[in-house]
Image (cartoon, rainbow, N blue to C red; front, side, top):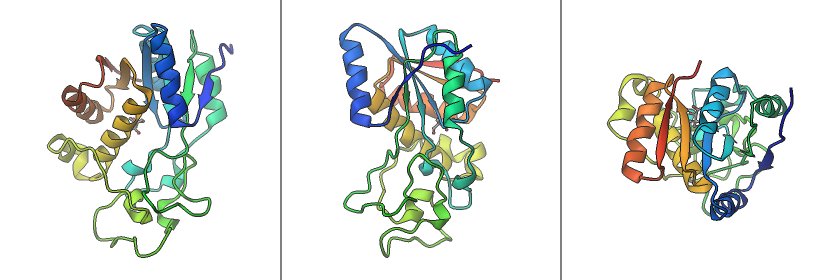
Length: 224
Ligand code: PAF
């Protein structure tokens, strides 16, 4: 059964403005970060968020910063319309879907062409924009470095990111920590909800926020 239709915001300044306006009206904001293609696990995080705040923002952004050049960003599944339908079916719905095109700063270099790490699933292997920025394949790099667009600022939880899955996915956790920091700074949530099923990711974000003190609460939630 379809419920409330979320407002879809793609611009980060507009997103921040929405959050600040709502907070000035005394509302609290819960954030559920996702990369889309939502399943029951994500929906359980949205339900959990409803227990803590008045308003809910779900972000849908396929983050190129957490994919290495050997992982295929282009085949990451997405179905935005279906995601919206699923969110509308959650009791209470969600207030905003934050769906940015790009969350990285390329400095003076401008992405050229369609394949420039927007939120569509572009293949990093194919994207070489500008000249001379391409890094040697033998280095462990993410799709962003591969692009040669000049992104070089990362948030890292240095000890925890190297353990367990970090051994086989060396760029993954710094990509997650970086994009989650960006999302926190844009949405400015009171509460964020992450699945504890991805335990190492959850632990890294918990460690990160304990230092940054961005959030009032980080909710522990197992997802299916
Ligand atoms: O768990 C995920 O879906 C992603 O790693 C996250 C936390 C949304 C960051 O891109």
